[in-house]
Image (cartoon, rainbow, N blue to C red; front, side):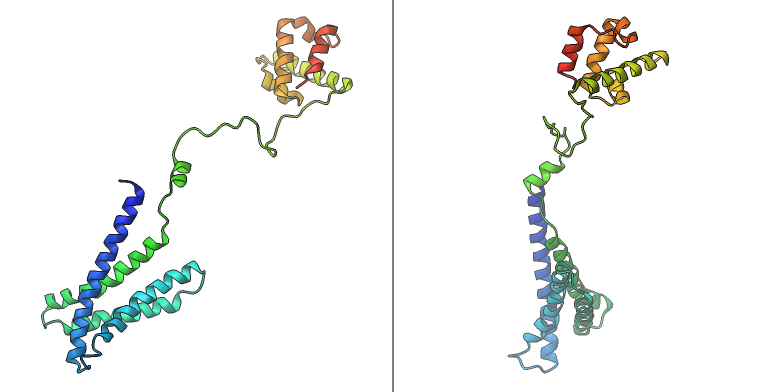
Length: 232
């Protein structure tokens, strides 16, 4: 059973329980009004005033929370009329402890189920988009980084900057070899402040011809021109 159906079934169940509790409490309060010599034509209003105020006050609490307003007064009103409803139901019960407990349960259930209905009203049933957003799985891979995504520093295309970048990569390559490390394109790029692709290309050249890595100006003209054409 999906989350949406669970939400709907629970909401219907709470409504049915609240209606049953209201009916039981209404009957006891109506009989108490008749016993108190309230006119029969008006006696039906008295239970509505007592238990109806509880429901309206609790719904006002929900509305006040959504409006970021104070909930002190509606909570006080709900508490006072809830206590009055319980007391009047017990007063109508026969003079036996179990009977008083039975009559007290209806107004208590009315308060609790109405409050539960308020909580459900503040929930939002899960939507397909919400469920898909929270399902585990691989994150989508963006073919291009966003505009504010940090990227590796790119070398300017001018000849002097290109020569300086190549010298820095060569120095980083020699330093890593001297330290007993295995040079990588990413490591050389970070150390020299160039793009990772540029570091990988020079690493391939230095690995293929170690003598070129040891000579500052030992690059072949064609190879140097090919590297200069695509420094990134």
